[in-house]
Image (tube, rainbow, N blue to C red; front, top):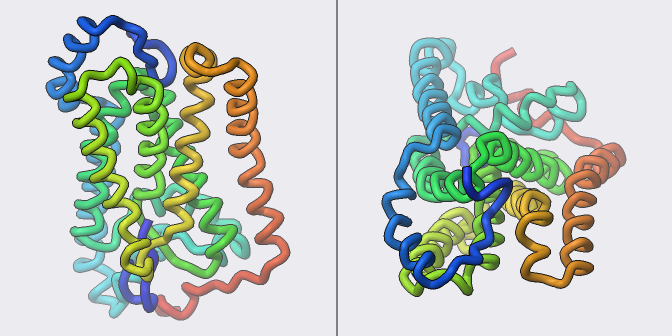
Length: 286
């Protein structure tokens, strides 16, 4: 998720959850052979998300040049009107839809392209491993919402847009899958997964290296934790208890549920004790 900087530019087989492999080396080799083709097979939810993000961005462009620009309004104003994330609008005007709408808005072609590229490589693989459209969609949106809650709690006055909070939640799922299946992966598959994750992780957390002026790092961290926690919930009964001590797995499962329940409650409490300004009021014409 990218912040506005200076308020004028924006910055059936595997069952539920991640499948933990218990197959033999021959099965692992067979899986390795089909890994690359499987990555690019059509995944309906990921494809819909990609189409939505791209279509909405081009709709933003058309609306800006045909309407907002002629009125003398800035690009930032258009994004605010379309539902960019801002704490003042959410707390003072109860515009809760901004948690969702901001996930489909982007500041620039490069911003949109970067997020869609990450979603293409990571989303197709995660959707394949989860193998359940509903749970995959829930993972995506819960990650985005978790990023929004953390952003609201610690960065109330920022104005931001972007799908990266939700996308980085998929990284949390990817980490769980990699840890559970590492022993049964071939060397080639370990290298493929590790390289792809490293590339995506650096891409999505690059704001830390650059000072983070235009990057909403709170949304990135919240999205990752949200995706990680929800992935543990999805995989607990079927996979995690097969490889870890049951008491440890159960504690991890309970902590994950508690995190997702308490995060919005904690955010409401934090924000209720703070005065949050409507940072967008002077950007658009009255």
